[in-house]
Structure formats: C-alpha cells, structure tokens
Amino acid sequence: MVIRNQEGVNEEVRRREVESSETHLEIIPLILIVSGVSIFVLNLFSSSNNPFLGYYVDVSYTSGFEVTFGLWFGFWGCLGSYLGAVLGGFTQQLPLTISFIYFLPDFLFSIIPLTLFRFLELDESLKDKRSLIIYLVFPVLFVNLVDASLKSVCSIILVKASKDFLLPLFLRKFVGGAIITFLTSFLLLHFATYKVKNTRLYIKGVL
Image (cartoon, rainbow, N blue to C red):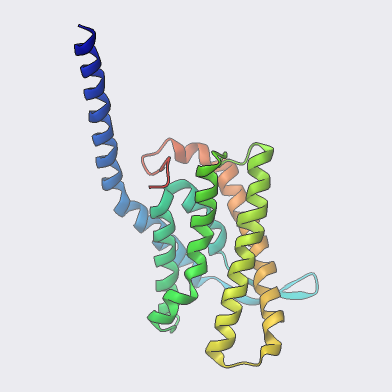
C-alpha cells in the first residue's frame, strides 16, 4: 500500500514537471517578443552629450530594463533584450555583424545579475540589505564598467578616432549608464516584481 502511494506521488511530480516544461515552451516566444521589442524601442530614444553636473554623459534607457528583464524572465529575457539591442543598432546603420559584437555587453547586463541572484538566492525586489548591496555592486557598477569599457573601445576602432578620446568617452558612458541603470531597474524591481511574479511570464530559475 505504501509503495503504491509513493508511486502515485512520483507520478504526480512527473506530471507537474511536464506541465511546467510545456508552460515554459509556450511563453518563451512571448518573452522574447516583449523584451526584444521593449529594448528595440528604448534604444531609439537613447542619446549622447546630455549635461549632468557640468559634464556630458550618454543616456541609454535600455540598461535598467535589460537588468530587470533578466531577473524577471530568466535567460529568455536576456536573449530577447540582446536581440532587441542588436536590431536597434542595425536600424541605426550599424552593420549587423558589428552590431552583434557591439551590443554583447548588453547581454551581460542581463545574464550576470540573473546568475548571481539565482545562485545566491537573492530577492529581486531588493527589499533586504544583502540583495541591495549585490545589486549596487554588480548590475549598477561592475556591469556598467564592463559595458562602458568595451563600447568605448569599439567606438574608437569603428570611427578610427584618436586614443585620447577613449577616457572621456568611457566616463560619459559609465556615468550615464550607472545612473540610468539604478533609477530604472531599482524602481521596476522594487515596485513591480511582486506583480510580475504572479504572471505566467515570470521564470523562477535561469531557464
């Protein structure tokens, strides 16, 4: 009798795992569309040479959303955001092959926070001190540091500009990116994560 009950429990677990897998397969295209189109549109409104405290910074509205989509939608949110950024660059006359390379840091914006938050079991809504500190150190500072470095080097190479422009360009991208990442992703994660978790689009794990 006990063996039969255990077999029944195992069968129920397998059934739920299959249903969960099927649900993920159904929502993956929707996640790719939502994240990709959002980043594509936001990329159109990004701008350069914005005054901030007497300096000029680059403003990219995509960075904060890329962090958020990764934490909400898992790997598929990361992939959709990256593809949206690549297509956005292509429509702005950047060759497609170059666009794939230039926007590779945008993928890091999503995948690094996602990996850390899932591995360390952090709170996406940033309501505890540990989660907030990790968020500030990695998505806001470290990932923006990598993004600004790679994109500054790529920009210098693409336009064949002097190396003297590298540091000013890096600072513009880093400062602007860190500010926008913090403002947009913090507000979205802190106030909207609970609602997103109650939808079918939320991915609890990485995949």
